[in-house]
Image (cartoon, rainbow, N blue to C red; front, side, top):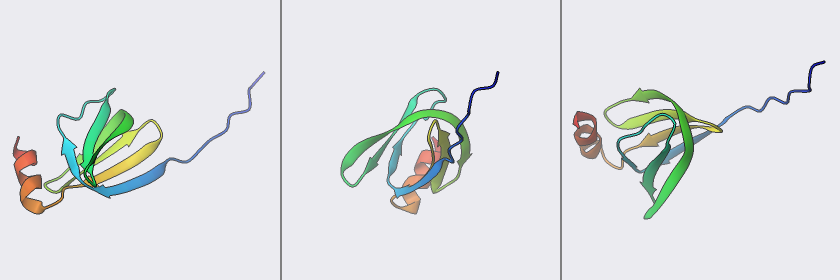
Length: 79
């Protein structure tokens, strides 16, 4: 007997902020946005890390977090 399975699409979150590295699979990611510290739910996959943003998939959302300025993103990517 099969149970009814409800599928839900994940929502996308796009913010400009400062990611606190390292971002680890299985842990919450942390970022600074609007003067406050925000936490995601658990990271399932790191989709992309670029010079000025990071894209991650969490349990319930897809996040794109863009650095506040390009120079800061380059410094973090080099680390």
